[in-house]
Length: 196
Image 1: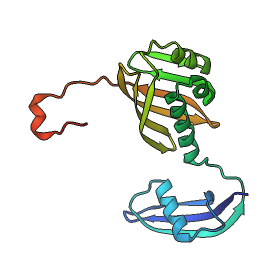
Image 2: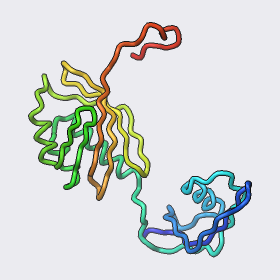
Image 3: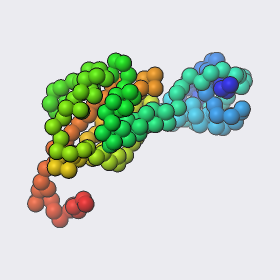
Image 4: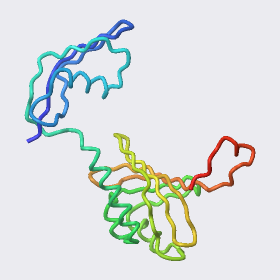
């Protein structure tokens, strides 16, 4: 069973003032957490600045289901999505989409609503060959998963930034940006390097 810590806290700020919380609860890994680790977690999670002192009071470890989902679950779903896209297995990619899935393409002003439409658009796309997707980066936080990919069909290559929101273990919403490449300006060549 999951463990949580229930506690009260008082925080003093170096510029005056303070805040306090009663019966606060946080998910913890393991069976215990020190007061110092708990104080650090509060300050980090609440994004507090100028903290002078944190007092932890009435700390109790309780058995209760964790309320936050681990961020690595969202990351895993998005990694599986890109793997299915790279395999051109659009139906498998579609199975990773929530029933209320929406994909927005701001540059074209289009919106794809629903798993079936997503699969159909990809299956009918007039590609020159199979799509190959290279995943460059994934950044995960409480707001979602941002991925940077290069996509090519052998004739056309594009770079995309996709912001995915995962709900109930499925991708519920994506906003995808396909920026157009542009020529480097000669006037700034002395200060920049060419990317390979």
